[in-house]
Image 1 (spheres, rainbow, N blue to C red):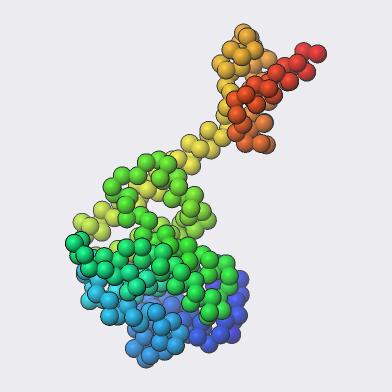
Image 2 (tube, rainbow, N blue to C red; image 1 turned 180 degrees about the vertical axis):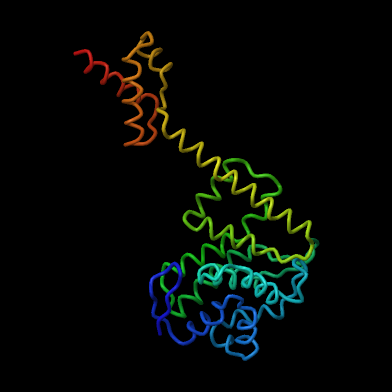
Length: 268
């Protein structure tokens, strides 16, 4: 059978995968997801998912993880990638459930769930890149939880770098993964994500500007070549900028070697 995603090429899939797609893609998939689960069909399509019905989740205060999962999935925009990631984002919880001094925990459930999602979607015959993207979204779906504790600029850059082209989809998934009825808590999470996205944009712009500056500026050139301000300084800076654009950042001694060679050729 054939199905065209909003963001993926046509993919040939079998009847099990098609049933899953059909359940996920109505504007509001709540009814169709419960139908495929209550009918027992999901036991054949993705047997990991019905197990969530039995898993109590004191964090989200749903009667089970399955109810939370369907609520999250139904909040996402109607794109197969984000809906599939939402459907599998907590699939690792039954395997990671522990009761200790902190109460009920699901430590590292994202990593476990990512492996489970990869195995199931591959078995269902989904496209390799699609499987990889869903896996990454599931793996990173809990990364934002520590943001309110304070992230350094390097942590923000690392989050954006790891997400790569999935960044917008990941952030959308995280926004939808809040199903609380507490208006203040909901607003706080959305504001925190707004802040993270603002910082990502600001840091990206700062990095872009920094990439347009040579690693030796005019003052450095004048000091190294013992020059006064003048056209030669501007020429040297432009030469160094071209090196950075074509070769990336180089060590200071290598830049000085290039500057020496340029100066010698210029004055020969």
